[in-house]
Length: 286
Image 1 (cartoon, rainbow, N blue to C red):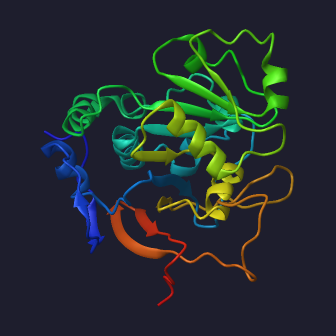
Image 2 (cartoon, rainbow, N blue to C red; image 1 turned 90 degrees about the horizontal axis):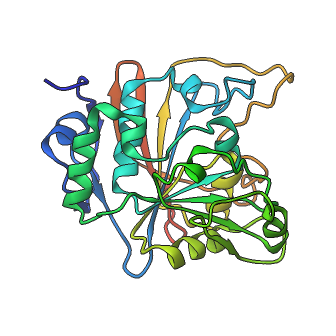
């Protein structure tokens, strides 16, 4: 018996290479196909948002994605699926602050499907856990977080010379390499991808960072797909706490709007699971 009811597929005309999902995951999610580009990693991101566009409540103890999705099991199942296919998972400082005990792996987010996720990685020939790349420009990360201390997953810190200086004396374990990409300033998507691919062969990269981090991937036109869960709640904003939307720190429209092409819609109860494709050389508005 399945741990969940299957997602209902409402629209899914995607063409491409079908991934070898084991039967349990195919029954729950349906078929999953990507269009990888030769010679470069395929980069995807995963977010959940309220109906009014909030991706984090910003309140102490309630800043994680679980409060946005209502800890929805289908959302967690999809998160696990994307982590299971990834070679690299990219996160930022905020994720470590919000969830210091978290592991960015498929079994951690949805333990009931651990065996199915492991079969999927075996089918893909991925014998190791995905590499977690922690992005920090200034070195202000929680070095006591579980991913650094437990040795359960491979981790890389991508930073600047300024950030590296701040990390000295913070007692990062010797097993956690620190890669300096430039002197100072925010790391671009290109620099983050370069760091990840130097450390690990990366056919598929999953960006699980917050709105500031994913903004850099949109700005660099390096995001191939956005998996977006639409949760049926209204969060609201009153200015007492910062409640960010999907993009923060940058503007695109009206001068340089970024348009996506809808490639899939699935439903689990009142939650919608959307996929949008993005590319720099195609006008998806047509």
